[in-house]
Amino acid sequence: MELRKFFDAIQEHKPEVIVTHDAPNCVPLYRDGRNGDPTALGFMKIMTMSDHRPKRWYFGHHHVLKSWKDVSDVDFYCCGIDGAFHVWDTEDEPDV
Image (cartoon, rainbow, N blue to C red):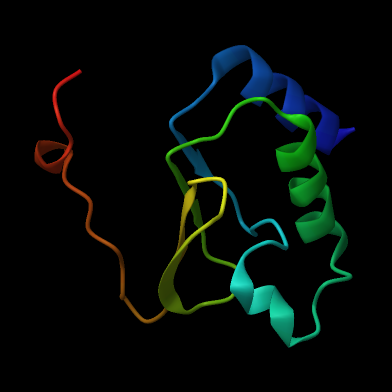
């Protein structure tokens, strides 16, 4: 039910940024044997079903400071641990 609401919200609002506790299992850190995680699989199913791709997807569950570019052009950021974080500045974005 929660994942369905999440999918519906993405389809309706088409956000440029998504922030969740976990990430879809397409993020490379899932290649260490966690491919069966139900939340990661659910997020991957949403990405497969949705016609929208956010620019950035932030998550923190794994407590590492890393980023990945997905084949669908989504930038994934794991938000770190012990005060580590990613910096993103709107000044870096081109005017639309």
